[in-house]
Length: 126
Length: 173
Image (cartoon, rainbow over all chains, first blue to last red; front, side):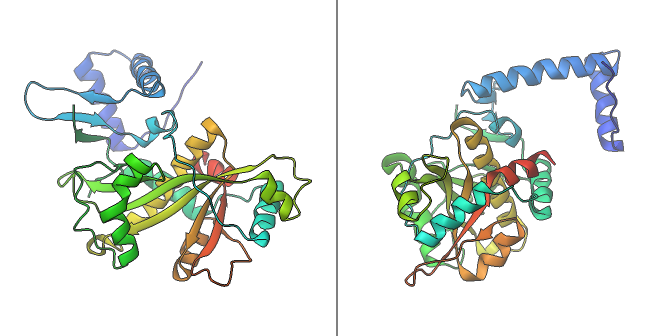
């Protein structure tokens, strides 16, 4: 399988630095290693485990990536009752029976921004 | 400012939160934690910033809900193929006055939708419902929420609906 990616200069530098630091000879090797680690993270989070780093001193840092939260077990949202009018019920039923609308541009942009701007790590309890 | 959005924790600084709306302030200060832990009627997510990880910049609360088979029948939708319509209720969303107009509300809303899509993939869900203040209706519309007609005369809020199929497509785009 051939894999090609266009990276910005910042990400390109990060890639080069990672290869040098980790002594990984090729982009393909780096991709395989990164996938292995990501696969492990996804598996752990899917089973409900939280990902953290522990140092000899200082607080524990927990990884809190919106990406990994996509596979986390359901938050177990509690159930509440909503007071619907007949007209509201009919409208919701019609909406879910119809073809879905295209996602709003603001939602698409917001999703991208969410994953770009929210933090990857936090300090937490052990 | 690097934001983190996570579930509300007991040590978070809820008392000083002020979004300019006493109902929303009061909920976070007095009820959000106990509703999350003890009463199980909503899960609250908060936006914090790395250098002050206990200072709440904004929050939202989610719960699950549904339109039951009986309610569908009452409204004349008995021929619908679904036994019920499961939805996620975005019960509250607010940003502290000191941090408004920085796009934090947008990030919280999108995070809530992102969570709803993830939960929907696991347990089934057709949409996100919000009871919007009239002044916020156009803001929710910008993100694809549809205004539901027929609000009761006593209702101070406007019910709105976002189809999770659209939201899911937005996440993949």
